[in-house]
Structure formats: C-alpha cells, structure tokens
Length: 460
Ligand code: NDP
Ligand code: BG6
Image (cartoon, rainbow, N blue to C red; front, side):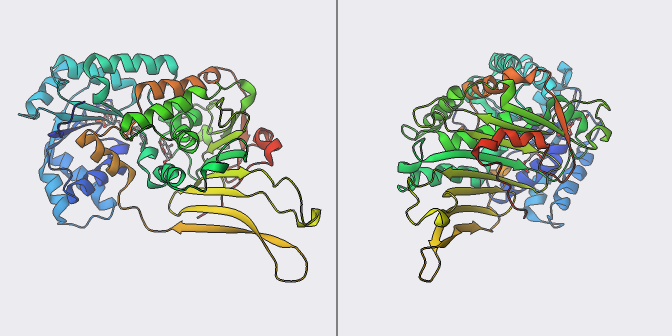
C-alpha cells in the first residue's frame, strides 16, 4: 500500500458547486488543524488567473463564516495555484505537470461531472502524472453496473486499487460511524441484533430542498443513483454487517462487501418511484422528465443473521422534513402478560443521523403509577447537539492525504452495490407525482404496509 503523505492537492472542478460549497471550507479546516500543508492547485476552464481563483476561494470561505485575515485562510490562499484548460486536452495535463513542480505524490480530487472521470484519468496517465499519486473520485461512481466496471478498468490503467479513493461523504459522518461503534461496543445489543428479535429495519433520508439548481445533473441520476446506491446502502451495511475480523481497512470493507453481495437484486415490485410537483419546471429539467426525485424500496438480505427481515429504504427531495433516520423495530414479547389493554408498541432502536441533531434512542414501555398494570410508551434517548469537530469532507480529505482508505468504497463493494439496483434502473417503471412538503406518493405506502407503515422522522 502507498503510505507516503500527499505532497500536493490538485482539485479538478475547482470552479464548481461542490468545491465552493464543501471542499474549500474543508481545506480551510485542514489547514487550521495542520493536516494540509501542501500546495493546492485548482484546474478548470474558466479562463481565470490565479488571483481570480484566490478571490473565488476567499468568497467561498466568507460565505462559510471565515473572518477576513483569518490565519488559516491566508495560508490556504497563499498556497493556491491555478491551471486553466479543458480536461480533454493533453496540453492541460502537461501544464499541470509543470505547476506541480517537484511534487512526487500528488492527490488528485476529481470534483467533475462523472462523464469526465475517464478523460481526466487518461490525461493524467498520458502526461506521466499518475505514478506515485492518489486519486479521489466523487460519486456517483458510474450510472449502472456496466459503467462502474468500465470506470474501474479506466482508473486501474493509471492507478492501482490502493491509490483509488471513491468518496461517499456519508462515510465521513460521525453519526454513520457511530452505527458501527454502537453496535460493536455494546454487549447488550448483539443477542437481539438478528432475525430472531428484529421485526424490520427502516432507513429514511428526507430532504425539504429540491434539486437546487442542479437540475441538469439530477436528470442524469435520479434519487436511486444519487443517494440510495451509495449513501443509503452504506448506512444499511453498517447496520447489518458482521464484526470485522481484525483491524484495518480491508477487514471492515470485506464485511461490507459481503452485505452488498447478500442483498437480493431489486425486482420491479420492490420499488415505488415518485417525482415532486414542480420538478419538471426546474432549470435544466426536461418538461416531460420521468426521473425519480423519490424512491421507496423493500430489500431482503439473504444471510444467516437477517434472512426474511424486511428492510425498507425511503429517500426523496421536497419532503415534509429534512432528516436521515434509522428505525430498527423489535418483535413483540411472546405473550400479553398484563392483558390486551396493556400491550405497548414494540421496542425499537432509533438512530438520528442528521442533519444536525444526532441521537440514539430506545423505545420501551413503563408502568403508570397506580393500582392497575397499565403503562405508556417512552423513549430513552441520548442526543448530541454539539457540532461535530470535523465535517465529513474534512475527515475524508484528511484521510486521503495520509492514504487511509478505511472510509472509502472499494472496487468490489461499489460493483456489488450497483448489482442490487441494476435490474430496475432501465425498467420503464411508473413515476408517481407527489406534492412538495408531503411524505411522497401514496403508492409508496404499500411497500411498508405489512410492517406497520413508514416511520416519519420529526423535523429539526
Ligand atoms: P459543477 O458542474 O458545478 O462543476 C463542474 C466543474 O468541472 C467546474 O469546475 C467546471 O469548470 C469543470 N469542468 C467541466 N467540464 C470541464 C472540462 N471539459 N474541462 C475543464 N473543466 C471542466 O459540478 P459539481 O461541483 O456540482 O459536481 C462535481 C462532482 O461532485 C460530480 O461528480 C458530482 O456528482 C459530485 N457531487 C456534487 C455534489 C454537490 O453538492 N454539488 C454533492 C456530491 C457529489 P468550468 O466552470 O470552468 O467549466
Ligand atoms: C449528495 C446528493 O450526495 O448528498 C444530494 O448528491 C443530497 O442530492 C446530499 O442533497 C445530501 O447530503 P447531506 O449530507 O446533506 O445529507
């Protein structure tokens, strides 16, 4: 494995939306913590000078509350270089080689449209820039199984697997890592964490926002590719995987790949697709678009631990709340000892993964004071309102700079995850309209009906 620290960071897509909203604030935080001490080279085709690039980065930092004359901001701004040119032009890559000066182990960050990944990688390889380097590739990694496999082959022409960092920012979130920590550090959980006690698992990723100016991008992906094939399946893997056999990145990623391989590929009736009213009028969207902005699906995991436990995933834009939440519902006790009137809702574990308030909660029942054996449902909850020390991007870019692949997707895992959704990607499935501010189309109710319906996270 390549263990050298990266000695330059090259940002393809330096003038783009992701860079402005997420990457520059993360780079600033990495400079402040002392993790980033190398030149940062932006590459795009805006015709900018390095001073214009500096002003752009400075504007991004101001938008994220960084004060003027902040020391880390000044250090970051003075470390910037800029190369202008088209990624499909070999000359751009030659000029990048010059701008890299004597760097031996650059980290290339591909914050570019997926259709350009291969051009950039081929350009780097042709200019002799791939040897000794690492590459971070943004999601979505391909648009189906075949294109993900082709992309992996293209990446491997220049970069061995241990130099490829497929980023999924959900893996950098504290609350998503806590799913693993909570499961494998609490002995009380293991006896019930299986098909004998768990009735169902639900994961909801709800967003109040729409496509927010990213209509053209969204038309190419839809909800299933944008957040389910990656973010939601990683959350599911953390909930259902076996403990890793030892330390190290590959032990963890081996277990996650096993989960993806044991999930049954989706069939048409496992899925309901929806589209919010008004989506077709968004800039960049086809007025007759059938792209899904909402999906609800039922998944089965064919493993010894989870056989026959229904798993539900629901993700969508312009829904009634912004919240990502997991609900693991347990089966009821075998008998109603205190009579049918005293039967309480089943126990559950609830994990609030974001956006801000992160919580772990256990649903239980306790007795009311008095002579009758009657009670009420309560929730034992631990809430963490503190802002995480690091954003997900800060954590992941820091890991890529030092060459730690633990929180990045591996080739086999990405392909196994595509295999799950691949059968339904190209089917002409109906897309049901839903009003903004709702919980999606009523047709989605049927997916979770026999498990008691969907759990709707509360706002805020
Ligand atoms: P944008 O369209 O905003 O930015 C694209 C960038 O690529 C711009 O800097 C653009 O430069 C550059 N570019 C495009 N074509 C060329 C070319 N032929 N030659 C040189 N430069 C080129 O995209 P985003 O920032 O939104 O997304 C980038 C990646 O990040 C995508 O893979 C996306 O899926 C992923 N992502 C984005 C998220 C987001 O919130 N935006 C969230 C998660 C992932 P110029 O402006 O000079 O043309
Ligand atoms: C991105 C998707 O990967 O994740 C966006 O492309 C989505 O469509 C975003 O809004 C959600 O991330 P978070 O961290 O806000 O839950």
